[in-house]
Amino acid sequence: MNGAESLVRTLVAGGVDTCFANPGTSEMHFVAALDHTEGMRCVLVLFEGIATGAADGYARMADKPAATLLHLGPGLANGLANMHNAGKAFSPMINIVGDHATYHRNFDAPLTSDIAGAAKPFSAWVRTSGNAKSVAADGVAAIAAAGTPPGQVATLILPADTAWSEAEGPALISEPLERKQVSQKCVSDAVRALSSGKPTMLLLGGLALRERGLELAGRIGAKTGAKIMAQTFVGRLDRGAGRVPIERLPYAIDQARATLAGLEHIILVGTRVPVAFFAYPNKPSLLASEGTELLTLARTEDDILDALERLADELGALSVPTQAAQLAPPSLAGGAICDAALSQSLGALIPENAIVVEEALSTGAGFFAATWNSQPHTWLQNMGGSIGLGMPMATGAAIACPTRPVLNLQADGSAMYSIQSLWTQAREGLNITTVLFNNKAYACLRQELANVGAQNVGRKALDMLDLSRPDIDFVGLARAMGVPGAKVTTMEQFNVEVARGLRTSGPYLVEVMI
Image (cartoon, rainbow, N blue to C red; front, side, top):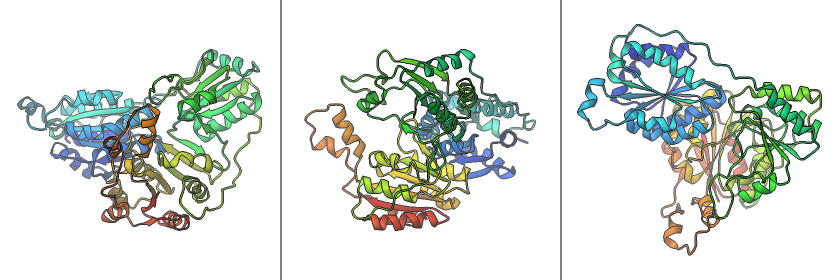
């Protein structure tokens, strides 16, 4: 057994059963090992950013890491943006990055680079295997690092000779780390704030946004009168009929500040102190009002559900009924396409148990509010802000949950970062309906141009935010990669084609002309 096979067998024994791959010469022994080893699904992607983005979506829905296979430093570099997004979402991921043989590095071949140096800013754990006999143990360490609560990006660099040389076999898997219980002081401080009678908010993230966490937070809110709210962008949120409804903290600074104004206490549950996404001239970075007490019940890595259970118990809220959303989707909208009509129809069309991957940016501003009482579903968003995640994340989510329909609400500009995802979706026969909103622009940046106070903006600047000349034919691109689709210009067409896509067992794309 060589080092590559010992690593693949170790990964499979550790529960890592999916690998999103874009390999090159230095990874060929790992490719052969994937072929020789049962239990590992191999998914070919056409760009490394799709591999890391798909691993993010997979981890969010499977609650365990996938592996990626990347080709040397440049291949890793192509995947870094979505490694960043995965890190911000606390998604466990194991990147296997091939490198030149150890004795070949000193010759400075064309693909030689500082792989570890490139990986470190985007990985919580980085290691380079020193020899074939250590590769399996390094794999165990990578699994442990990725699984460290709440989830981390781990990068293992595999020099070619450590992959092809003789090894001793797979290594024993260590027990996964458990989430830590929060201290009694954290619970007592939250009880004090919630019992004070003063305006208080529970700000939720992480596992607090799963169905059980929302239920507990809803009971606490009903008992104490505290408001519950989700952080601005959510890694995974269970919502729709039967779930406790929750709003998200607004993105815009002025709206967020107004939402948090007047609160005496903000209790953080699986999230961090709310800050502005960007700095703007003459606007604050911190969103809470001065004088608001910020308390942490549970950090993202803590046992959040246990903390909420203990808090609810001390408040006598465990038996308090919650106000779950009742199924009342809106009717389908008709007429001209506009944001309000799109929001209304999506609220009606989301199927039961769907996974909604939302990277609709400016067009999708109203989608969340219009779908709170739709069929029960799970909502995923980009946590790191580096666009181009939506289509890869939908790909990974569909592989993690093959029986659930995936609805990808996708902006046109960010789609072009990773449009090759459609080819993998077709190759794998994934149940993904991509609704692509084509406004021929980076429309959100037009608004940001005004938000930052840029003055005397002319044609040169506006052209950098424009996606026309030539117009992009997304239906044509989809068909070229094996995905059927349709272009729609009215809400009636939109309703028919989205419903068709959701009925189709494989991928389908609906291009919506805005």
